[in-house]
Image (cartoon, rainbow, N blue to C red; front, top):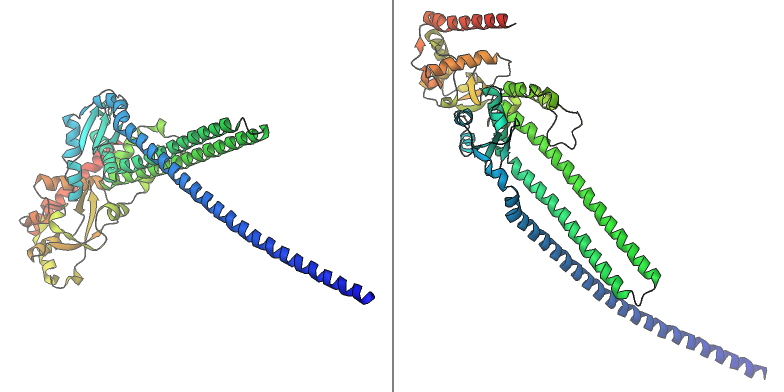
Length: 446
């Protein structure tokens, strides 16, 4: 009897275990099936959500671009129509200051000849700025200001540098990106707000108050996030634009200095002492005048010639593009150079030192070597930038005297070779007389 009961218990326990195992298998299979169905459902939902999101974002981007196109094509022209009507061709005197100078760099000449100089008749402030369509606008106040011609020329070529560097185009692109981002976020906020309101109105009859409250709270959080992100991006772009704009001003000042207009530009800035401003100019498009003067004073001609001059130290340069700074050559010195000169072996040829004066490479020495090289049939010689600090005003007088005698290159010195005694009298004596005159003027002035 006891054995039959034990056997029955074992059988029932075995059946129970089998049932539990079968139940677990069924539940497992059902769970796997449910998980597969759930994953398929989530996959469809995600795919549709991604597709809908992409479609909505694309529509918002296209709408933003359309609104920007309408603004820049129609509204912008209408808004600025009155300002354009105030512009006319600049006076002849101002155009002569800008167009009469010829530069060694032919690209600069070509670009300069394409520039249109305009006058703003109604603006009485002393200002000039690079404008669209490769033009420079000077105000009526600048045209009639008491500043001298050299200072006006320095300002004009500062603005010309902005055109060369295409600073207006770069600023326009940055401004366009900023406007696009702001307009896009505004449209996104409006779109999300409308969708949220529609969802709340649709679910109001069926949803509980707590759900509507949570939906409203979620809507407010999203709007706050979009609003904050939009202004952070706008702030970052504004900082970047201000930094780029200040950098462009330094580069334009550097270009004017390269053309030999550093002192006139500093003189122009010094006449605006009250406008020097604060040291902290993070949000300003222009550096303070004090910083610009300091930067100009620290510009070395060597840096400028490497950046803008198109040649480096010991580079070969065409002789017909170098301006001499003396108008007579000693025959005795020519003979000494010819004794060692060999056009097939230029190792003994010391490079001719030059400086950039008013945008033109000027020889500060080496006139004899240049003439001998021309006589030997060479059209290029090694040049080196002269790093010595020279008397710029004296060299301007030397160059002016050469040009008055139609000496624009070493080729014009070929028929200016005279005996050494005459050279001492005609050239050395002339230089000493000029130096005495300059010293006397400085003494009287002080």
